[in-house]
Image (cartoon, rainbow, N blue to C red):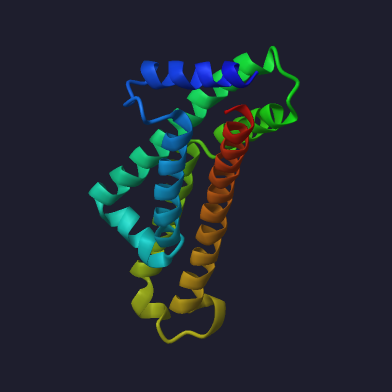
Length: 177
């Protein structure tokens, strides 16, 4: 079984056009690391403002998400083939987690959520002068806090899914190599 997974990693490396020393697990590691760095920034109001107003930054984030989904989809295909001849629970758990991630946190869902957040941010900023001296939840800082809390939760869920898949990949690569 170890050689079966290794053969798939080699085939994927060749079919993806990766350098020989770059393997699927390493690519997943790299994009996960990149996401973790961006997620810290993106989970803040300042990060949201940059995403909403800076087209280059927005494109970089969406490209990173596309890369994550691409490698997860490739991994999913490999694991479906492996699952036909293996009863390994880790393979099945990984397939389940990838499927859930792809269903709940695909790029389209991310864009939709962030569009809603950007619209809310614009409303907050539009009313900033009116709400600057208010107190509580209706104040500028209260509205920013609520939006940032919602944003933080969403980014945290995406990050948890991405990291969970990466952990599965580490476990599988140690198990099958």
